[in-house]
Image (cartoon, rainbow, N blue to C red; front, top):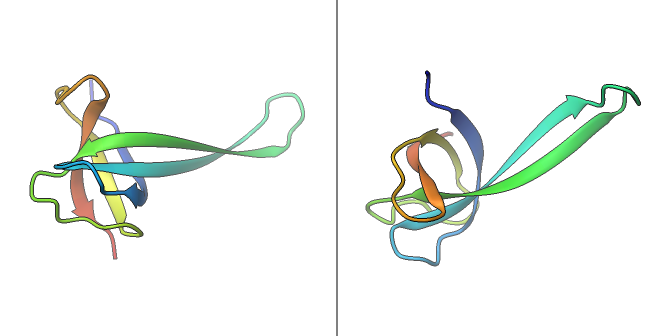
Length: 78
């Protein structure tokens, strides 16, 4: 099974070796046919504390680093 790759914005870098990434996705509601915007926060592993608030990053699914941390920062997007 392929690993999930998501794109989002770093909204918090306070914990050590962790960033919180806000991922936003849009989809059309099946009955109302309205475009719905959904936001979700993911904790991602950042080994060198390299990423700061406002950075656009890609995160990839990986082995669990802790209870809530199941993603790892892959790269910075320009």
